[in-house]
Length: 180
Image (cartoon, rainbow, N blue to C red; front, side, top):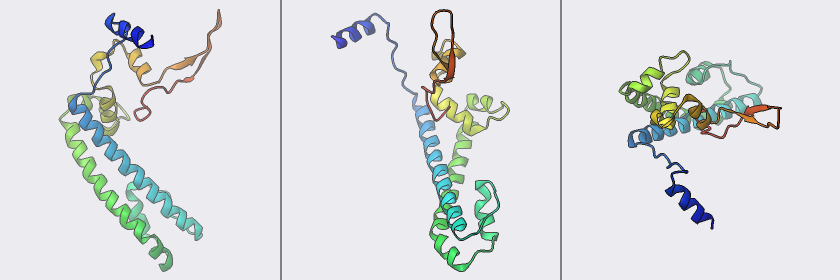
């Protein structure tokens, strides 16, 4: 019975068709996922190294992840600690190299996309955020208003209203978590 009702609703146009990302945006999204994985792997390696240092009573100064390796190399460490973290440093060095290559390729791809370049002109928005947004939204014309985009991304407040009382809660977070 449910399948019959769904089929009739589709025939009557009451259920919109699912949007399929264009091939160009699918490739962009896959590149963004590769970048995301590399960033997460780099973070995990840095956290592991910092944990090893703290266990020995040592501390590195707080720094951005892209300069972490140079700070680590410049820091005086006991030989036993350096030997213990050496395999992770090798992996982290490889990740950094791959991340630079992926970022370079992504920047070149973004430079050819007018939409991404336009979005990247907004304050605080770089090519990574702009590319992530575009890879999720794909064709902005499929939305009738900005409110639909906001809802699609899960950036609308939950509502628990009754009668004269309107109660808005936290954002629903029902949309794509990566872009949000």
